[in-house]
Image 1: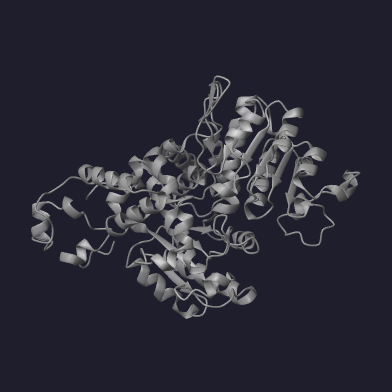
Image 2: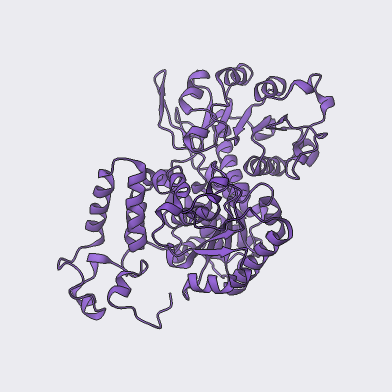
Length: 547
């Protein structure tokens, strides 16, 4: 924080990083010109938090609950995170996904304050540095989450409205990973939108033209990256919800220069691999014996496949041997190498038609499952109900413990429900879902369902990178993060989830952060010197207490 000017009166009450509301002591009220500006009773943060939670509970639906919690976020960051952290499993789907989807759709209509975000326009790239400087207000920024909002969750292109995803992601970084909220910055890169409803909406707050691409787009992104890396030399930069045409290219461009991370490509891959490692610890099988199929070969689907592919090599397979285990299905059906519309990320996993006698018939998921016999089936298709009863029963007919992860979200886009998967496989499926799922009681056993929520990984990864001052996020760092999660579950417990509960995310984040910091030091990437890795992590972990 820039403490050269001490804020007083309403300036202090209106600063969410400094405001304590009714928790300002009598001495503080005198010191900061607050006498008479607050009710006379001095409360502690625990009492304030009880009031916030009770008020939130009284709201009739998720939308109203989220609007109320965001009003607390806008006015008092410490109180907001105190409540969020103490009710993290309950509030995660309200504050972030899936509750955030409606807020993004209606962002322009409900806009009240910028919530300390930076809005950058491709029409005015000359304003990038000024905009970042204004938004950061002299704060030493350690973490930026940036989006161009072309591929928000499962709901697509939302232009400037997509800034909400950057804000929401940073909320989870703080609540789950203890990243200081005064040292983060949400950013949206507005290069236009291709959503006609936004372009025609008189209330839409973003640029009113189609998305610019190619040289102007990449120059815009590069100007942003160069600017923030220069302004904040130890910055950890998180790319979020970029479209499939740009996400992998940008990650590849910057990954050897700066500590950067793309959650859709890498985060989803890490948590999916961690879930599979948990499932295999329950089944007693090896990853290198599995046949992998993903339905939905976009940014997330290819990122997950790449992570599994790398893990198989880490476990001893050659690249050629590992590649034989992978099959991707997209809108064209099973991907073949003679298809002219394959993306660079799809191409390494495309198969030869000569492998199948009926390759021309493999244009739907069910046909592909019957032809390939996958033992792992992952869904990132955003096609609700795509994992049908007949597909799931087909898998269960040839593998004892099918691993099935319907990861698409929000709820209506999920490929299957956990309850159906357990029922259709007579309790044998090892399941993780992209949305929160209640435990499933079946044949006398309660099956706990792991949520393949990226929040289990990226807060701890970020905490470890920032704590160690890592110069890069390498493949080994990411692998270590996945194994850190996969080792937490109790494989002998009947009905055990393949991933730890979101309620344990603070514990999980600390475990990941320590492993990441240790690996960064092992690789010589750390810019911060430390002897004890747990101490290194705990020193930078921010807690929601009034200072």
